[in-house]
Each structure stands twice: as structure tokens, then as C-alpha cells.
Image 1 (tube, helix red, strand yellow):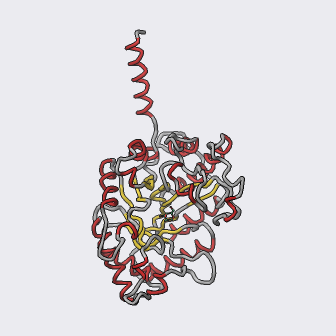
Image 2 (spheres, protein in one colour):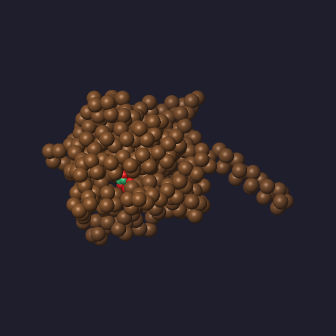
Image 3 (cartoon, protein in one colour):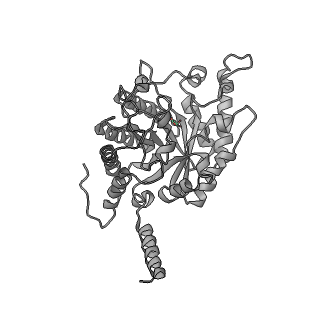
Length: 377
Ligand code: GLA
């Protein structure tokens, strides 16, 4: 073959592999949307390679930070929508849905929100008014364009007698701050789906409390469409049975179930589910030069097990969103302490697919109509 036709053959081979290469959004298109949390470098195109990969693989995006109160509404009379707007442009370009994250949260919310005129607490009425104004402005701006909102994030407690955590929202307004937030959101954008979002919902106590919370909301006629389980998992925690039970219990309430912030921490922790204070110790950051094959395999198996559950409950699981595109920009490199080298996602630091990606895609492909049926547990 002369060099030109040789090159042509190589080119055609590359094109056909690219065309046949399965993507997450494609293999799960009849099951659920597959989402990713992105940052402003990625959606603005400053990180072009990442933008391309995200557009190809996913059909739903969440702003990792840019729609949080602190960024979008830093001062009482100042809103900054530039960064948030970019997610909608990106989504339009790549034919994706946008998830709004998040309207009411105790974290990443500026201090002024919880301050009254005298520097102490605002009154209940003042804070409710502030919440309403914020929700109307933010959810109102994206009315008809957003798929749904994480209306309230992380309101449940992690222990103790109380169902709800002690937060300024609760302390100043009372337990009904959640109901108000959802009612305001519905009014601001009647078409948007409204979600309650939290972490560790696989832990039985917190799962039960979430069920109680949402049941109460439904009884009071509060508009809510779904529950988001963040799903910041580890290799060995939570047990698969608990992951499944959470989906089942939430769907029994008639809720759409969304996996909203999926990742799998591969680094050691002292106690499951809890930030590891001793993680600065030597040996706590063992994969600084990359994840060894044996660990890649473990991660792939863990993801496959988890996705089997999602597929089994695809009627109720409407979306699975990963908390980040690639290992390099995962928040888990800084949690529970800075300077870790974590490998929790499907794409590595060079944006190459990991064995975990292949495992997940394979599972999706097997489920395609006409394909040999896999036995789901
Ligand atoms: C929580 C929040 C997210 C994000 C992660 C850490 O899960 O819901 O917005 O802040 O923590 O990145």
C-alpha cells in the first residue's frame, strides 16, 4: 500500500472505532439520564478536551459550585449569573439537561443571609423573605430551562434525637423552612422538578429520617418530585443491600430517585462514612503515582455492582450523576484533608477511560434491546 492509502486506511479505521465507541448517554438512554458535575473552566471551553468529553458522554449537567448561593448571590443586592448562565449554553450546545444545585443549604451561603440589622439573627419573617427573594430570582431566571432543582440540600442530621440538623435556617425559621423553600420554588418555576438532596442516605437511620421527612411533606401537600441521594461512596461502604434499600424505600413514596453526586473514594479511611482525621498519616495516600491494576479492577467491580442495582430499579432511578468528570478535578483530592491523590471517577487525570468506565458501559450495552439479557441480582 502506498503511504497515502495507508494513511487513509488508518484514518477510516479510527473514524469507525470512534463511531462505534459506546458512550454512557447512549448505552443508558432508555434507562436514565447520565449526568456529570462540571466547573466553569469546563463549560466555558477553557478546558476544551474536558468539554468535548463531557458533551459526548453525558446528557445531564450540574454546576459543581456556580449556582450555589455564595456564588450567584454574594451580596444582598448583587446577583452574578454569568457563570451559571454558561451551563445553559453548554447544555444547549450538547443537547443536555441542566440540574439546578442548590437553592437552600447551610453551607456555601454568605454570612449576611443569616444576619439581621443589628448584627444578630434576622427575624423568621426576614429570613423567609430573603429565601423567597433568592428563590424567585434564581429559579425564576432559569424558568422553563432547568430540568429540576435541588431545592434543599443536606437538612437531615447525622445523629442525635433530632431528624433535622441544627442550621441557621432551622434555628431562625423553624422546621418548616423546608416546606417554604419547596413552595417558593414551585411558584417560581412551576415546570421544574423539585428535589430534596442529601448524603449518607444509605445509612439506615438517615434513610428512615428522610422517609419521615418526605412523608410529612407529602401529607402537608408540599410540592416535591424526587429525592437525590448524593452517593459519595467508598469501595467497601455502604453495603450494596443498603444502596438498593434506599432506592426501594424512596420509590415507595412515589418519588423519583436520583443519584446526584456519585463517586467512589478509593483511599483508606478510619471509619466508614466519616471523615478520617488520621489521613495525613503515612500510608493514607498510597496511590500518588496512579491506581495499580488490582485497584482499578476493584473499582470497576464496585461500579458494576452499583450500576446493576440502578438498572434493576431503572423504573424509579431517573438520573445518575457523577460528581466530577475526571480524577484530577474531583473534590475528593481535598477531602477529608487537602493533598490527597484520589481516583474516584470513570476517567483518569488524562481524561482516559478507566476499567471502571468499560465495566459500566458493558453493563449498559448488555441491557440494550436485542442483546443477551444479563441476570440482574
Ligand atoms: C456536597 C454538596 C456538593 C459539593 C460536595 C463536595 O455533596 O452537595 O455541592 O459541595 O458536597 O464537592
